[in-house]
Length: 311
Image 1 (tube, helix red, strand yellow):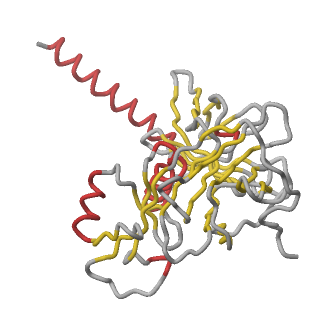
Image 2 (image 1 turned 180 degrees about the vertical axis):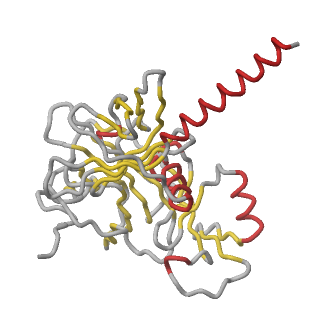
């Protein structure tokens, strides 16, 4: 009986120590950038073993794990395609409306259609991004063409042809090459993350509200390539997906759905007139299938957005 008791105590202590070790790593870190114009990288490691890296115009997220030698392995979320496209039919839009998410000036991506050709979405080295990055075109796109580095050998071009769906309001997400790469590692020592060329600041505990907000954001935006649908508000904050059964029940109970416009209208309005907090109306976007193209449309040099910081 004593052996069993001692074993039970040992198991409890070991489990507690392991949990504390995992919890101790969870928090926020900062690594300086080699680029003097950038603010470096802000890291957050969550207790559920998800992580996010926030840098200028970009967010990378995935899973982290730690071995017995305090080596942390980061495995970014990855998508089969560098782009994700979600659409809805919007009767208020006469042409084509597109919101661009997570694009940057380092990896130049192109957008357009077969008739008009393609052009860079943002200028090279773009800084001071606005949110949401939104463009409304006068013409209706019968297809959407997306490409990354179209002039380079081995580059790929993707297209979406709406067919009978006839979507005209889109969210196009970009999954940068940096999150499509293999896992990378860091050494955890004295409350810091040590990489090959730099060491982070000492860990700080993340406030609970901040942690919850970032965790929500990571799952719904950065890992969105796994979602078949997204529900967003006026400012393109993703609220949830219909794949979340709990939230689907919430929508059915508290909103009336208009299938023609793909809009959820709250049954009981809260009376607030603030776009950043307006949950009276929500919009449903459905994921569309991208197909790889063998022929590239004509290319334009001028970028769709010219983003630069004001002097």
